[in-house]
Structure formats: C-alpha cells, structure tokens
Image (tube, rainbow, N blue to C red):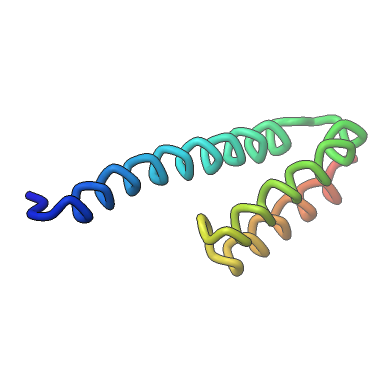
Length: 84
C-alpha cells in the first residue's frame, strides 16, 4: 500500500496511463485484424497507411517495441502483396 501522497498520485497516474495505452493498443490490433480479414486488395491497400501510422505512433510513445512495429508492418505488407 502507498505510504506517501506522491506514491498514491503515482498509482492513480499509472492506472490512467494503463487504460489509455490499452485503448490505443486494442484499437490498433482491431485495425490490423480488419486488414488481415480483408480479401479485397484495393481495400487493404487503402487502409494500410492508416494502420501503419497507428503502429508507428504506438512504437514512438513506447507502447510497443520498435522491432515489433516493424514486424507487424512487414506482415501486413506481405499479406497485401499476396492478395490477388
């Protein structure tokens, strides 16, 4: 349990940050899933830049690692290129 006012404030801030990070990470995961479930190449190509931007922002602020971001973007690009 927190012993000081600053420790209690830190706990409150950590909870707010955790919920904020979880929201954006989940939103990005849903966008990635939507692209991977798409069978239309044109739609996937149209949505890819938005998803790439979301992934880059998560990596920039430290929610995901930069290598994971690169891996996700590579996987999306590979999937889009394989669509007929």
